[in-house]
Length: 259
Image (tube, rainbow, N blue to C red; front, side, top):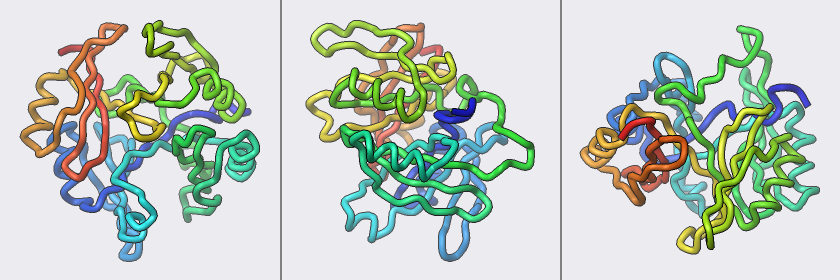
């Protein structure tokens, strides 16, 4: 595996109203948007301080017919997307969308782990800069934490260790809820895994965006038409988090070093 295999590189929102979503997140988090689409495939790139960190695409009637709700999905870089997709399937997961090329961007597939959590994998084309941008996980507006709600923490740890090379960093004991497992990529903690709570209908990946102050962000979410579904709460590491839903129904989370 290369150093970039297993690295989160992008997040993407599927929503029925792209322009409304762009206005909401611009107000709530401060993202700027750039049109990167075409008449056949509208697409908005989200930027934080001039750096692309994600995108917005339309949730079409076809998607809705497949039972896909408004959602955020992460992209993980892999050395060979076709081989990684097969590995997902061989190890008990599934391929939701077969590998295909995105002109001038790379080759991607939509996959699910053995417990049903969906994620995208991608082999990007070589970049003009010659490589990946610097690590943005601590920067405002970028994803600060990746969180998996799973059916089996130990099983998911082993699975993602095999397919992405992730390793266990350490556990927080949550009592009856079991461990909250911090996982690492190339020795750096990037996210956590925990057993899915009963109120969550499916196993899923969640994404925490960095903001400067949770209380102010909660106010912006409310005035923008979104809602808080859990929190704010303080978590280990002297951070504050809140779980939210945007006006179109997509779930997302925020994290800050101050309340």
